Length: 214
Length: 214
DNA sequence: TCCATTTTGGAACAACTGTTCTGTTTGCCT
DNA sequence: AGGCAAACAGAACAGTTGTTCCAAAATGGA
Image 1 (spheres, each protein chain N blue to C red):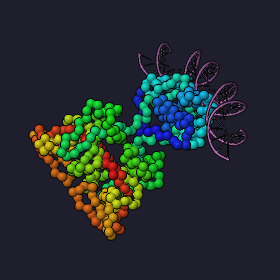
Image 2 (image 1 turned 30 degrees about the vertical axis):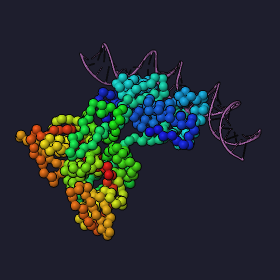
Image 3 (image 1 turned 120 degrees about the vertical axis):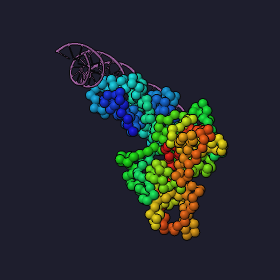
Image 4 (image 1 turned 90 degrees about the horizontal axis):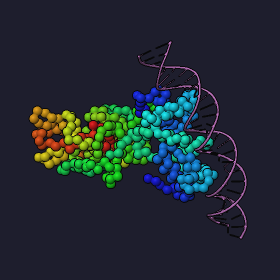
């Protein structure tokens, strides 16, 4: 939750934490003198000193001569991300490919909010709605939302959206590369794996997460 | 996004909008005089008058004698909610029951963030981690997070966490009440429903959503 | 119209607040 | 020990800011 920064002295960390807590609780930033008393600092000049330091280090923005003119530059990092919902995923059709402007917020595409923890650090994540019950072997049902990451290769054991060229079919399975063949393992333990030629599988993306709203 | 309130004069509405925009853009509330110039008001006393009015009407909280001591009371509905993660759900054990202080933020329990859209408007939502592969008939696998709502009855067709007294087992299924019996329908269409006596089923909660992080 | 209520104007006060200045202390490296 | 940069103290100044007082204008019924 609260992460300490390595390049801050304990005093500066304390000031930053105090501002965060104050802002969270009261809805407006503290004054310099409130910081002084709140952090056990003895003089306003010391607080000013550290505030200037925090600003040059990029942790907050200051508005000179304006009372309580503090602005946290990292808005309490919002714990959530916005990803584009670019289409549907169904058994018989390749998944929609995110285009260059897909992530443009101004686009007309739907955007959905997801907890940042679900896609921590991952780039190029987009969302697809599942149509049909063809993916129950992947423990995914009609109406689920699948978060995908646009990649063309995955590590062994990762779950991917796989286009089977021969079968002309999309399937979500764990991909294992084995001596001359590819093993596609369903998430549902009661289903058997599929073995096929490497040329038959086209990775369309990595499955990052699944959301089901009942 | 911005909703006009019916019980506000246009001036008060303008002031409220201005405060919202100012706060959004600068990160701290405006001063009375900034409100004056920003809204085309001629005197600080007029602004003070309207601010007092806005406070008594419940749209903001004021901190007297504190510069920029304005706090918008409208929870800026943050598109995400925090729910407590109170334990595990496994086949052979009843689900943990949320206690009165479970939702107390100060508790040591883990809190997780979820998109508000997943639990829109629902009360008493908590989270459980799934242990084991015993619920694949519900399209739920080991490691999934299940969002539950603490209720003791569900409507026909809703998915619930059901404790089967005879079998001493937890299962997640759609519940249908049928003439003298209860039909428990798995989400996975390839599984058969279970029929049992009403006395054998104890609803432990409604399943609101499922999160799977791969 | 007349009266009560609401809204507006203008000004001034006292407290709040950011800034700056000078000097001191502390920690740390050579 | 000596030197240097960071951190600390105290005080004072000037602009900002919430509040209040008094009076005027607008509004809205009866």
